[in-house]
Length: 326
Image (cartoon, rainbow, N blue to C red):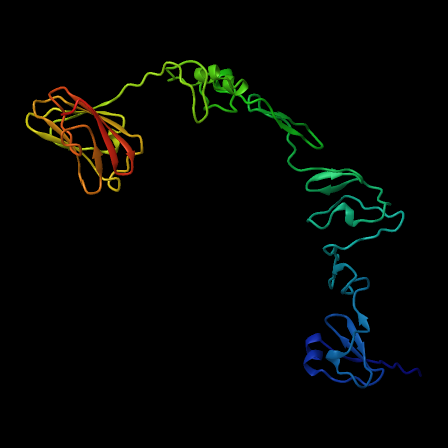
């Protein structure tokens, strides 16, 4: 009579094995009932430190070796391997890279060193290209007329050049704020064209530059400062006519250089309009010196009504008065 013998090995769930953590005898099997994995003891190493001898479903990739340029792995199903940044991948002759998308700044066609790629459907930044092709993002395809720009194209390098400046006078939009005639002056910068561009110019002829320009028939209109009481000169009186329309004796005073810094060469003409006699004097005689041919040289008086005299600054705090004085 035959005897049926049933042999069973030690078994339990992965959690039970991890909790017990036994040391299997040399050659003794240990089976995980929930994962299908098994280990074979060596009589020394505890369960948790022992490597699996049987790993369950055939064909799963559990991991990859560091430094190979690959990453990924899993315990079941489809496994995806990705190329690490800045890794060069060599494909053996005859292999085909089909319909793959390469993205990221480091994963460019230059990272693939083998020329045996037979499929051109490689997508970079949304554009399908073949080996040897180049693409650029943001091509300038056209420019708007009148902007002062020219060039543009649909592919490759684009050269944009600045065209002749455009003014509002000819309908352009490049320099719209320029007035009529400015574009003409920019093209031919002559004195006549500048006068045409400056709309409020009242003179004519050529411009003169230099330290001693020659002026042809200049006309200078002096402004009038009418005073009705004694008055002290201010900076605005330079090259002005000051009328003193006062009924009684009055003064026209010149301040110190520290108070009002008139430029050397300043001329102020004083006219006595009223019946009151006008005396020209210094605000501070000890500081400001006035010289004249008057009876009182440092404080001359205008001789009579409608007499005039001109005060001329020779240097700091040094003035001379010339004219119809007493």
